[in-house]
Image 1 (tube, rainbow, N blue to C red):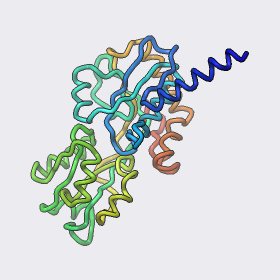
Image 2 (image 1 turned 90 degrees about the vertical axis):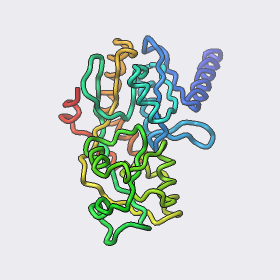
Image 3 (image 1 turned 180 degrees about the vertical axis):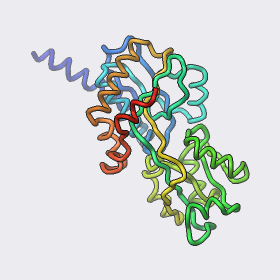
Image 4 (image 1 turned 120 degrees about the horizontal axis):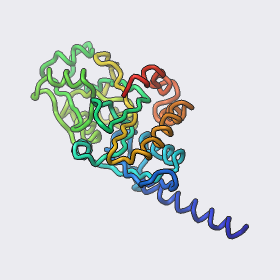
Length: 277
């Protein structure tokens, strides 16, 4: 009995250590182990001061590993690098992902909808401050993060503004620093991207947050790609993801970061979730 308890304690301690390093081990479910690359992006994925990874996407992966008994690890990569890895067929599984066009071996399980707000540094902004006035003012420059998918409508707005009014940043932190310093004037971002640092931003500059109705909520969820995902593993992971959605676990995890009311609004109705391929 004592020996078994020692073995259990050692296993638990090892799991805790791996979890803190961005690795979630739950061997026994999948035929292979998988590494999930993801960019550091607001509260979606965070690198804490002690080096640990945390955030909404990280918590989703941890819960998926627990349910599926698969060995999954999370590593941070720049958003632009993530897009290149995807084109090269190096990604098997991706959380908090936007839907793509159907393709062989591709599966998308939608779980949430994401709204975008307009963040404005009011130093040069027109008064009264409105979304339309900011867009119309040809002096103002918008920021975006290279490699991040904003949705067709927001991409169309960036194209309409033209290259002289759109500045690209390598990360969300870089974009927010530019906004606070007045190097850009506005940005369209989801609450998960900016909420964690909003108070710090407002302490450096007068930043206003405007509701943006120029684009419908962006549908996000899990992308599964076979290959490199083993077909049997894809079925197991898909069932586990569906279970997380059905019993409300996905919404509960999101509520840790944006609050219960906003998380419930972000949850997709069943018919919308099933409309995805």
